[in-house]
Length: 134
Image 1: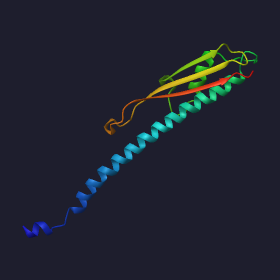
Image 2 (image 1 turned 45 degrees about the vertical axis):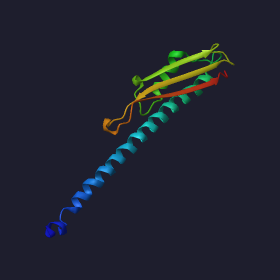
Image 3 (image 1 turned 90 degrees about the horizontal axis):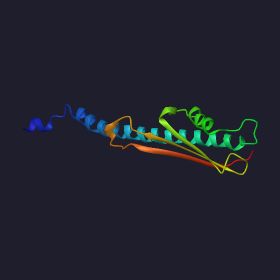
Image 4 (image 1 turned 90 degrees about the vertical axis):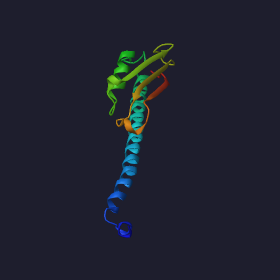
């Protein structure tokens, strides 16, 4: 029995197994959170860029922005997300004339790649509201 207690072969393997489980779990968790933040930033950038375009392409512009054009523009400004997975709404209040307000809202349902992390699906929403200048 004493010989079995003093035997140290295989200890490194057991330590590696225990620590690697903790390390890889933390690594996957950090990766998933980073993906969430990157997707959120991508959606916010696309909506913000489209909002900036909309405020200078009002009714008095040579090429006025339409609801359909702005929805398409949000999709084309996305880098990480697929445009078909993003729902975009555009509204003008009261209209597309200077002094009016354009509001662009985009939503995306985020899901983790590795479902074992226990992270739930989340809805990412980005909104841009600005006064039309031209």
